[in-house]
Length: 250
Image (tube, rainbow, N blue to C red; front, side):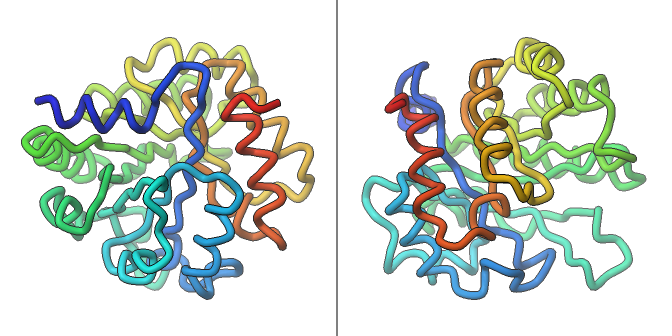
């Protein structure tokens, strides 16, 4: 019972400090894309920039452990599919909360793609993961995406975020619904911390930083953004600017 409370306090130590998390799980679904050719140097640079939490697949933990610092928290992502198949939107569980704890995880991460025929199976998997995490005191993050045209309407995104929370997620990652007003509404109607995701890479760095800044002002608990960070060279300078925005240094 108390384990999850303690771990959530480590992720969100105070209201004015936003969580700086970076998912690095893309290689399973997309292959070794630009920026993810080698995990350890990237993780080192992100930590130099002030990241709080790195999220990787269970097999990638072996590359991360040698460079993971005591102050950096570890998330293990256990939903998988690949772009090589015909059902890439259908994520399946490839790990358990027990495995994640054995690997040293501070958080378990899953994904549900809403709006596709396989949605019910993914919701079932989310419920299974929630039960496992509850038994072990491990926080559960759900990456809740709406796989429809333009990423879903604000109403659909709000529905997906609430569904993920009410199925057992302790933290929900979602897409930006297009306006501050709609994002405030999404955060207000989701009863767990909400992290904003980055989605497709934004070329303009200032536009990206504006997204981070505005999402915090609208009520997000932080960010869970990958490609908009790790596909830039060098990574650390931008990461430091993001950390300053999230941690209250500017």
